[in-house]
Length: 146
Image (cartoon, rainbow, N blue to C red):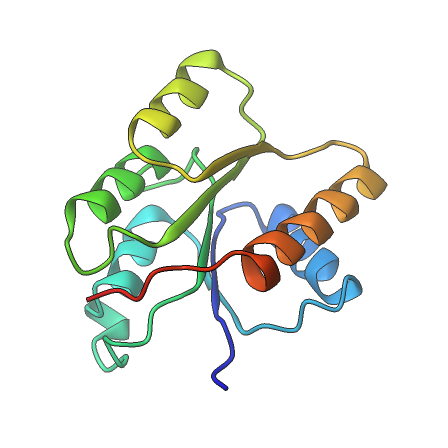
């Protein structure tokens, strides 16, 4: 059985380290690919640039997407995912510190599967990541992408 990959799109090194630590501490041992901005995330998903040799049929099971990203913001990344027939069904969870109502509405309007505000408290963050892993990687059944 092939390991389910997570694409973490996060530009803040502290939030990246915290997320990776939370995944590991919660025994979520899936491969995690980290993109540090929206352009890098799109390059990974569309197998271009430094990811041009990536096997295009192997997509992440889950995209954890920050919104406030350099180069291409998270909402634009989500829009491009949902516009492409090959990847439009990817599970995309917005994981951000933004609590702005317009970001929440825009995320869902663009087809986010879930919107989670990063808890400030470390223990709450650990629990949020644990629940994310259980639901999206163990319980959820995803359609096969074309």
